Amino acid sequence: MYIVQIASECAPVIKAGGLGDVVYGLSRELEIRGHCVEIILPMYDCMRYDQIWGLHEAYLNLSVPWYGGAIDCSVYCGWVHGRLCFFIRPNSGDNFFERGHYYGSGDDNMRFAFFSKAALEFLLRSNKRPDIIHCHDWQTGLVPVLLYEIYKYHGMGTQRVMYTIHNFKHQGFAGADVLAATGLGNAAYYFDYARLRDNFNPFLLNLMKGGIVYANFFNTVSPHHAWEAHHEKEGYGLGHTIHLYQYKFTGILNGLDYNIWNPEVDNFIPAPYGIDSYEEKANNKKALRERLLLRDADKPLVCYIGRLDDQKGVNLVHHAIYYTLARGGQFVLLGSATEKKINDWFKHEKAFLNDNPDVHIELGFNEELSHLIYAGADMIVVPSNFEPCGLTQMIGLKYGTVPVVRGVGGLVNTVFDRDYDQFHAPGDRNGFVFFNMDNNGLESALGRAIDLWYEKPEEFKKLALQGMEQDYSWNIPGDKYLEIYDLIRYKYPSLL
Ligand code: ADP
Image 1 (cartoon, rainbow, N blue to C red):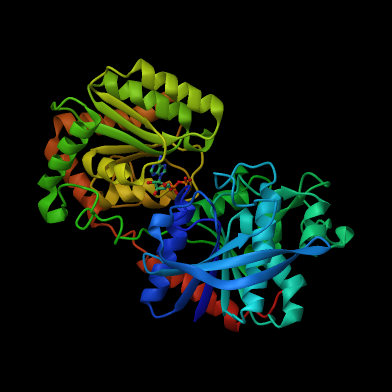
Image 2 (image 1 turned 90 degrees about the vertical axis):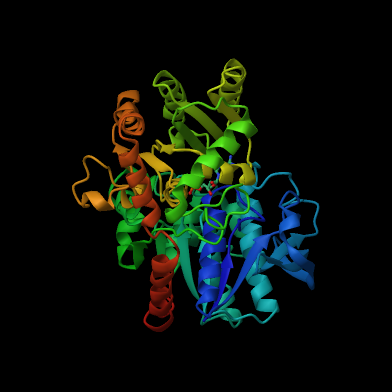
């Protein structure tokens, strides 16, 4: 099968979070199985050019219709750790992808509407006719809309679209100007509730809703979150749309690329280890302490790695630091905040705790350091408010770092409480779970984890090893995506 992924991230060249890991990991898995995969990305000025091999101009003068005229683009091509990627670079005064950041501009909707249009224009002009176009999140929600409303009539009538939603909270809102710019036109038609009109604000177009309505199949990134988005508030207003299209909706757990996230072959850690050499993990703990100037003492090391925002339960992350210290543990935090208020708060904490030999706060994005933390810590906390899938707990499991998580979204599908899980045998349990989104809730799980570490170290090790044995690779999710690709290729004709 010939599959083209259209996305705003692909790790490690462009990574703001799990989306980047998934685009890379899924593409790799599909290629291993013999499929041809290409990835189309924006060419940001701030991406990691050192992660691209053989970057060269592949298509000159791609003229992308935009408003009444056109924007001239260059398309570059290169290999990102073996994946063939095409980068779209518009040559216009808008500087859509030359802002020093991936997201966060006032005109993000226009930037990514342009990207969606340019990606399809590139496929059309370069005569690429994939069997499946797989697009991701609100940034590419317009891809199926444009395909079935415009490009279908230009010789792209057999392409089928899979649309994966990694985060319902960010849906991409726009006004009629996006219709004018992309050539969709006809505002009355698209402002219909059955098409792109936002379910709650009649004056806005909802790009994610467009993706859902027009895609041949859509999914979110874990079975439990699929249920939450359909039936609870986690759909952020799209529950009814999901309900209408439930026949083409499912939840597929993300996989982990065990070539990258695997303590046996990880180049970023000083002491590789596996299930049979778990003792080596202690050397990584030592190295982590040395690097972060933490004291070497007989204490459990708890970590948090992730964005610092409301979704991730930032208040509980903060509480976890002080609770861990109070319980005689050490804490390492690696996180980045986009909101100034949260950033300032953690900067203050960092200054306040600077001389404490049991805690380190690292603010920023640091891929290399994250590997050492996963390998060196004993536990990882993930106290999310909502969590579509969550990769950090799965990485923690592979590194024998016991997850302490809130029971929501994909965390429900991956972490099973050592003491209270009702559906898994004791030998299949792998962590600690709490439900209440408050300090007591967090303490009820983190406290049990710290107790076990101090009081029954052999039991703690057994739990960590049970987690390491579990398979959260792309093996199973790879099958599931391929099943859906096949389904929409052969059974679902064009929906509209
Ligand atoms: P998100 O909601 O951000 O997508 P996930 O748990 O799905 O959360 O994925 C987070 C990914 O980003 C993981 O690979 C994690 O290691 C990585 N990550 C998050 N924050 C940082 C950071 N500050 N530095 C390095 N890696 C990070």
